[in-house]
Image 1 (tube, rainbow, N blue to C red):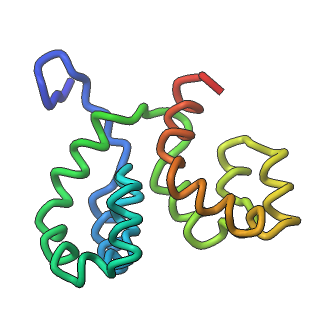
Image 2 (image 1 turned 90 degrees about the vertical axis):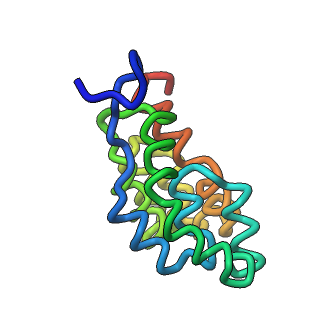
Length: 139
């Protein structure tokens, strides 16, 4: 079994490829949200990646962010990358929630435009934790 640290199992929960694709839009913080860094993702969103400087530095930090996310979040039946793609492109319709098995909120998102966009913002902040909870059976 591969490990990052002795005794710590390796779970490849996040994709470097998707991280780099999101980095292209990283001046809006997309890659930081994906790797479970909502506070800095929000800062990048409002400052355009710290005026582009933080965005360029992140090009080199993505492998470390990927390793940290892999160690931090629980792997399982729900794929993080697919859920993030669904949230990013179809979040308004609640497709990412449908994928996670959250049928009621998926229907609510569908009829309210992602709960008037506030639900989508909430999901950008908490999607990694939600998926980890589903994968560990806590939900």
